[in-house]
Amino acid sequence: MGALLGGVLTDFLSWRLAFLINVPIAVGITIAAPAVIAKSRHAQRPRLDAPGAVTVTAGLLALVHGVSVARQDGWGSGTALGVLAVSAVLLGTFFAIERRSEAPLVPVAVLARRAVKWGNLGGDPDIRYTERVPGGGLTRGVRAGRAGGGAALRLTSLISGGD
Image (cartoon, rainbow, N blue to C red; front, side):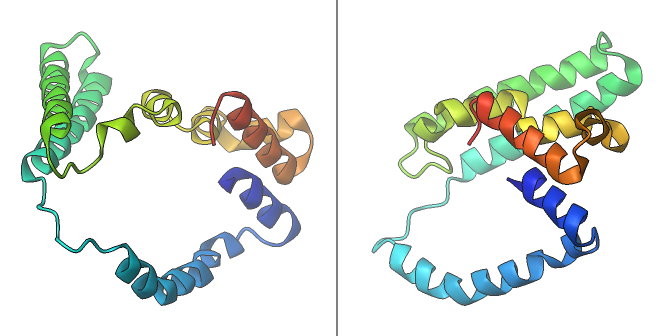
C-alpha cells in the first residue's frame, strides 16, 4: 500500500508531505496505545525469551555481516561463507528454541504462514521491484506517473500473494 499511496501523494500533492504523513499517524497511535495495551495485557506477565532474543539478533547480525563481506570479497570467500554458515546455525538454533519455548518471541506457527515465509525469503514485492528500478524507471515504463507506478507495484504484490 505504501507505494500506491506514496505515488498518489507525490503526484498530486508534494513529495515533501511524505515526511510529514507520519506525524498524525504517530499522534493517533500515541493516544490510542494506552487503551489498546491495557486491554491486551495478560494477567501473568510472560517471561522474556532471552535465548531466542540473543540467537535471532546474533543470527541476523551475522547474516548482514556475511552479505556485506561477500559483496566486498566475493561470494566464494572463506570469510563470507564462514560468517553465513554461523548465521544459518544461529537462526536454526533460534527456530529450535522458539518451538520449545513456553513464551516464544514469535510463535513458529506465525513464521510458517505463507505470506510471512515468502516475505522473509524474497522480501516485499513492492520493495524488491523498486530497488531494481533506479531513478523511478518503472513509472517511466508504465507511463502513468508515480501514482500509476505505485498502482502497478501494488498489483504485482497482490498477484504474487502479498497482503
